[in-house]
Length: 244
Image 1 (cartoon, rainbow, N blue to C red):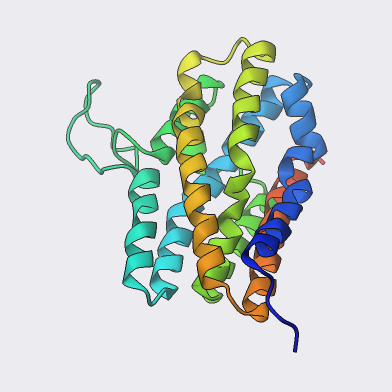
Image 2 (cartoon, rainbow, N blue to C red):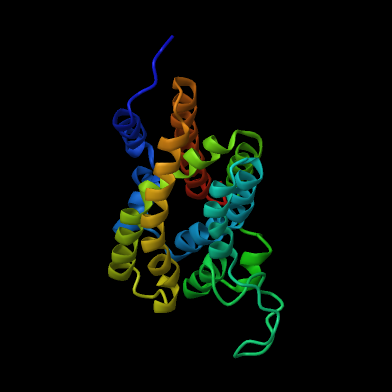
């Protein structure tokens, strides 16, 4: 019977998947080099909204599948971070029944980004621009987290190990190449980058602590590989475009 990897070698196996992250996809390379047109950039933002919507549900699924109270408590913070504190009262511009979240949170920040790149909030919320391939990939990721052991759902989230530097590069590139984007649109990335750095460290510790058998370690590596494929499949669909 194969022996489990040491903690250090297991962590290295997970980091070895760095090359499969979506930042090497041709669309992202074009996006960061200034080669995307405004409609292409808007298409990426509108499709990524569907992924943002999935995150709270997949995190809730991980919590539901986890029997350990201390892990559930630790993971629950992600729900509030993404959805924000719900506020049904009037905002500075009056009531906003079209906003499904409070004044804070990842979803609210993403809607600000959408408006900053020239999308109408209503067309993002009704998902009219979401490509079928993006919908299929994101739904598959949610189904994975709903049906697989919680450790695999957590391991799939380890793409956040690779995301902070990528997001920081995105902000720098967009400011250099896409001066037409309203500055308020960068709030999502500015808020998310430090949180992702902290989350990724805690997530890795959870995986290393709880995936201790050879089978669990293999499943964790496979889960992270699957998540990388989900992200790249999303970009395949975005890059393919609505007219082809």
